[in-house]
Length: 237
Ligand code: ADE
Image (tube, rainbow, N blue to C red):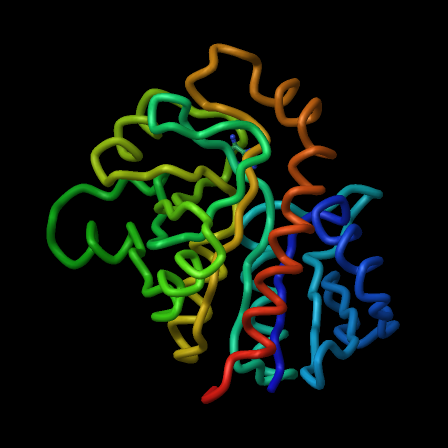
């Protein structure tokens, strides 16, 4: 059994890389930017694939996440992919800073293609999440919410309109890209997201995100310990 985390930022992955003492495999994906870490927990192989960096900063966003997910699935053949990271959420939906959610759906919120036909529907994504996501959330007492993905940290009125129309709760920059690639391979995908900022708080998003990043990554680590424990002890993969 192999679990593969796909994570965008070093800050998001570092706490549990350290927790499990998993090691970097140098040059595994060269010349691609993504980075592989590998270890073992409860007899299960645990991989963490980071999107990688350019010019000294983490490659956040859909393109790097798709490259990382594609490379991970083709070269590692995981039984499950876990996309773990931080997100924005909504106070009016009951969210709070550093709360961890399990995704119960995933779509893009910034693809404005007209029509309810195949073009419009396809561009939104709405990829399947792992069928065991709800049972996991219930067993671990975690909230669930729909992940919506776009290419920007800020939120324009047209993004909000789309998020509200489709019941989005967790705004990120990678989830749907990871879900798209997983859907092509029929690889189960689980989302574990921790809230750094409240999109309806009135605060400047990057400032709020930066201020809460460390705290959100700590709760994310604790949640991932529970998730890894749950997944590695699950029978019947
Ligand atoms: N990651 C953390 N906060 C985010 C937000 N508000 N939008 C997109 N990605 C995020």
